[in-house]
Image (cartoon, rainbow, N blue to C red):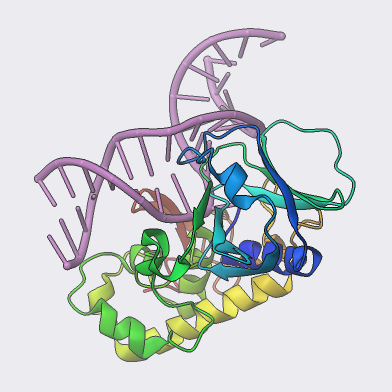
Length: 270
DNA sequence: CGAACGACCTGCAGGC
DNA sequence: TGCCTGCAGGTCGTTC
């Protein structure tokens, strides 16, 4: 489900609802996520006030009055805010119950997500090596160009590498490369500074566009407010192999790059 | 150091 | 109807 726009959509929906509220109880029904949820988290979390909900890459940082909960949605996770908790559904792995009875409920069929506690997020190993935010000031064409010198890997794998830049997942990597006219297999080290300017621009643009539409709904994604995202209809190449390129009319091609499905127009992308 | 690949897990679509 | 295969929005850890 989630790439950066979907995680940010979740964050924006949830933040005003839970900020300032006190955690009554963390209820874990299924601890077997990507890493087992530490049972000690139950007593760590209880009684703390939620100071805010931030995001770093695709990690959500649920900040407490002391330390923070690190939440990742993995491939299929979602968080919903329930004023009046309903029946537990399949894959509802944990609840953060707030004083007053509302609940933040985590559902994740594939269990690739994670829940951890850290007293110091900045130095946490999962976060400390991450690259800049694509929508922030530290990211741009010059940065990408500099980091890519000498790299043999494909440009698609390069921009999907969280140590280079966070939050560019498979959908938006494909879309940004299409918009920038760059072939996804092109070696990262053999792309000009000028083309990187365009790519950085298009990475930002596609993420911002998706954010504006509330993210991309594939299969079953819904935001924290239960509404789907509407960006799917705007996708130019993703999952469109065989269909005509919106720009040139050439059939969109599918190839596997870095073990991930990749879509591109062989005429527009070089 | 960089790059490639397996691993984790369930659900669903499609072919037979 | 049921069984099998392949595929899915992420990313960490291991190996070369």
